[in-house]
Image (cartoon, helix red, strand yellow):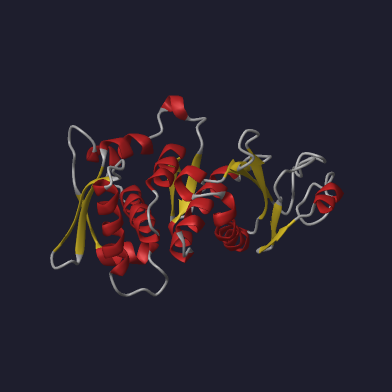
Length: 269
């Protein structure tokens, strides 16, 4: 049973938000608006798409209490979030909102998700095997960087699997080489390790032609692990494998990696 602070977010929506490269407040605003529509019985997100294209209105104070920083009292999150979405449209990105406007002296916001976003948010009867995340907006409000939110959504989407793993939502083309962003992603993993009570194994995958990291595999390790010996830790790695245990990251040496080959947990055999 889901919590009252959760809503279902499809993998297509998660991927759309990752590709939008939004700021922290841009992500908070999106999740806050989506949760608002999902949590109100009288509202239906499908009505925002063609042919109805209905606009919905919410108090800014409601959004601030939903995904803003705990205790926040000003509307900076709203203003900065709207600016992030305006910039996305100006840069020719795939818009999340087709309409987004403050009204009544800035106390309320009227919005309409784009047709594409609405379609991405729906799960059909034929789509029941697709991945989704139960997003807790209380957790969104406690996260302080875009990377933390993106890591969180992938982690909760994958955690129901017996052997949970996901590909880090990073690409060298968009964000620069792995060595330049590694520390910030490890910081995000440390934060989520504490919040979700999970350990992580981050395994960089190197492109054979360029010798550069092309993607990073993240394996989730719960306290009661289903990982089998020689399945969790790789046999070898061209780039340092990192563990995040109880909120603390470390890089493994080649000898340290070999010592852990048969481990089924990140912290011990």
